[in-house]
Length: 535
Image 1 (cartoon, rainbow, N blue to C red):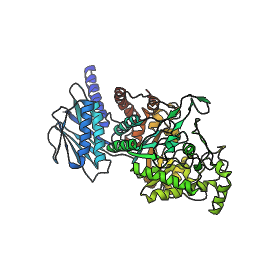
Image 2 (tube, rainbow, N blue to C red):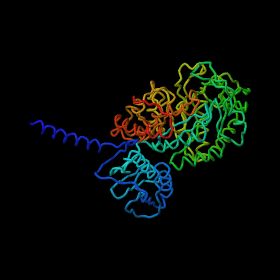
Image 3 (cartoon, rainbow, N blue to C red):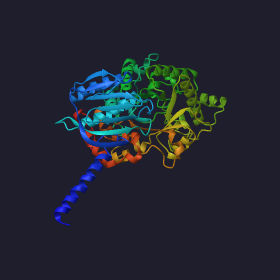
Image 4 (tube, helix red, strand yellow):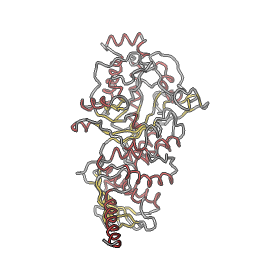
């Protein structure tokens, strides 16, 4: 073969490879699950119209707003049931799954069909990334078809605001980024030892006292170094309603976490009678576990908890309410005479049984209001904290957790999550060693985040439906500023979004990293502080 013929053959083979590669993925996060790329382009211009059906009007108006604000495209909107030339047409097909969508881009128009308004919204998020990646000189995007739906129904990001209050503007920024990444649950950690961040009108001291502390530990665990600066802040009920509405427009459900029966120091500081010891304390300035718990044997305390939850129900339409339930130190209960008497009266063998009785009672109350309880996996009564000096009685529960509970797995042997799924519990898998955003990039690299699989290895296919999905958690003990939170969150949140959305067979780390470079440009333009991590 002559050199000239060899070069021609090589160019031909490379062109085939390039076309194949182009058809295998697009620079979108999370990567769509079914994609075909075609010749030709659709050109964006101001003469384009958005056409919506009545069911997609709200999404159309949001798209119109985004295109004008982010891409300087002043596009008109009209309602119709027919697609026309030079239009973006939105419609709903009830035969699709609710979050599923199809996106079709031809040389003449763009069509987005969703299983619900959420599906249409996600179709637009894909289109939006394609627009960002377009050739800006001629406003062209390539022709393609996408059929897509998420792998898991629960794709969450958690922000801890008890340790540090971050504010309404920051929360809406995070919600906007979650929407781009098709994440649908904002898990809002609003109460803990370090601060109570939600206004409860029946108990004003929760924010008058519980939302403030005189100092804050800095550095790392047990540093005994302090900032010397008081910290305070909470959300009014009006602010919470505004944020919930803002999230709902982006098809994000806000799941509040109201900690009980442990991690309750801020509440006990406000109302000492809530504690088992009934002693006045201050909101702790040292981070970590604190071990006066709510006195779950006191009917007045149970009434308090139910009153708080009633106001929470009014603020959050979420079907799921998170009660925490983690790291409950039993020592304060163990040394209490009246707790021992209560346990004897109710035939409770272990302190874990006492926690399970309380948890089940709260679960029934939550269920009576048409909601479902969620809690960290300690609520199952298994001791996953061997060696906690504060957990003197570490005997496991002899009673069972109610079945209508979502177990949020974060620590312990994954066999515990497998066992829970087999027994019919709903599971959200947030294994700390793979999903905690407060961990350094050395501990949880971008690649490790991307390779996390919420389904425990070896779990039989028939139980996979009990694994609802995953959450990635931004605990904020050591991230006092918004920029620090952003640095720990981005770019790993993008990896977790693809874990939650994209089928395993479609996931490829190199494709993800390539698309991520485009997304970083968007973050930079928005002033989002991210770690330039590629490993």
